[in-house]
Image 1 (spheres, rainbow, N blue to C red):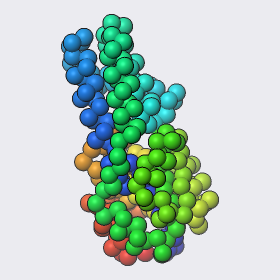
Image 2: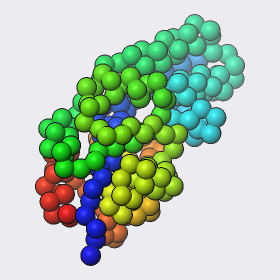
Image 3: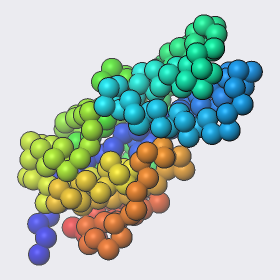
Length: 233
């Protein structure tokens, strides 16, 4: 018999608030900026390759994304991209860092329902300053017993976090929009993994859902989390 769930980890970007839409908008703007200087047909794929290549150096987040945009622009134009275009890319990155926070449906009421019964932990990866800014602007910080901003999310990350802030991974649940970062490694750590899809998810985060695992569940939106918890204990 499974032990009762005492701790719930929440992803932030595209689980609690909108995020990926700003990256997609910047990618379209980037393509328009480069159109006069290159006709490369796979610009988005090239950008993704460079983003992946740079993760070990820059990590996740807007600043690393902006540097990858600049590197892509230099590579695909063979160094011919004008300084004015580089300046516009930098401006777009700064704009992303100041975009208003838009919480997703059912977030506030779900956190209100769960905060008295469970220990809630925010587990997010990315740039420290940007994640802190979004959390502050969201007004959701007071719902959480702990905030963990990490460089990566893997099995060890969840084992450490749920041991530090709860009763261990076996009595924890992690919910998020990324199978690769939020769900699969949490299940590998021994926790429950709840997938709540977002209409936009970065291609890097796509993996197969562990549908055969008894600790995997999928819901349509956060409003379904509280009833799910009643079912699984």
